[in-house]
Image 1 (cartoon, rainbow, N blue to C red):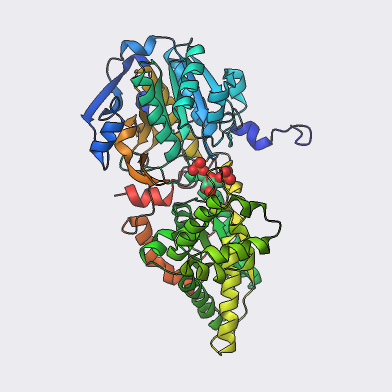
Image 2 (tube, rainbow, N blue to C red):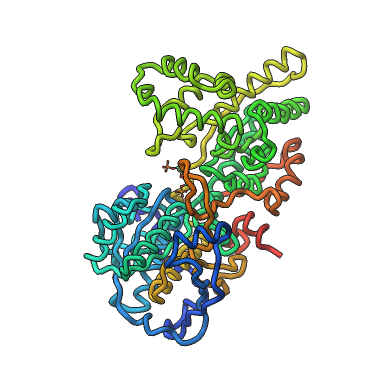
Length: 557
Ligand code: FBP
């Protein structure tokens, strides 16, 4: 193939032919797959209230697939709808492929309809039938471009009714929602809505997000986390090597992860940076921004004292929202901007800044004033669709570089710092979200999609597709479904209690954080960078089939 004449790279062409692995129970004859039901379940917290909200779907039993006699429902031809929701995550196309292949294996007449551009496609009735031919060029590739994704939230009664109408008209039996905690919360509400209205449409979810925060006892990891963190760790490792070679820069790398710091932690465990901040620890210690800056500057100064004027620092994307005084500032700014929409119309940033300074509480004004001007401007820039500050767009890495630089200059004047500091900022996010899935994600995603097809065929609704025992070879993975209401609790959202799937934050008592905490001092003082290198699709299993460190530490013996 001449790469100049084709938009398919040599690697893509070969990789498309990869046959993802499946749990043994699903790889065989569907007529010998039985649906095994476990005990009735309860929500992780606030059971009574969740039961009141989910009267139709609360308390369902966990299910697993095992050897036995298949239910008669497996044979009936069905039309299934699919929607990809939220941010892209590597392996999404393999979920589609697994779902498609599973449905076709159950009955050749089964159809899969993809709704375009995320949940808005369900509202606008924009769709495409997924065929073998269409799917061919997407197997084992990154991205969600086969049908696209979007962040429209399905929340209102009118939206649910619109979805119901569109799906009924298409003769859809089930909807599969591929999404994170919010999208799967909405899937649970939709399942409840359909049942409440005696609509025979089932809803099944698949756990997606690179952020890794849709996990719990039943869901070992969300898909995409493995690949995205492998990409970021490769880049962080390369940057570490550059440090060792040039010995002149401090690289401050912000990594994605809207809220939880799982990505930062995983990258640190893989690449051994000199510094990695964990937002959950910052919140637990109630650290101030100044304390964080001091802590980072101290590592820089200690290394400088050993003539090591270089290093790598990993910063989680959600950091600022975990710092108590900044959290308060952001919440005041959100309220303020909501009550004073005219601020957005002010012509200059200076006008906005001086206006908000008059309105903020003394504490928040103080926090605001300590921020560099560029960050003040970012805090007052465009809001998200809910009117909130877009914290993920704030250049935290630049903020820290600037603040650490100021601190070190101050220490220099006091004779406490004699080194050099030259910071380089990076943001690793979009670079990893659409990468070709690692073998782990390719197999896991295919298995999740395949499992979803069997859950649908079994007539279940309000379940999340689950594939477990992920540290074992794929053939030994266990496939089944977890009731969505089981993962829920009440949380305060926009001033009201809402039943939502609980987001998993980094556990400070968990093994991954402890492993990191035991090593960080050494990493800070020495040059212990590793080179995780690019994702390998072929080669020794410990390289090509490796799993996330976090998963290994959490689930390993
Ligand atoms: P999901 O939770 O929807 O999977 O998205 C995660 C994420 O990649 C975050 O890490 C990041 O903050 C956010 O999406 C970026 O969103 P957008 O694509 O809208 O810029």
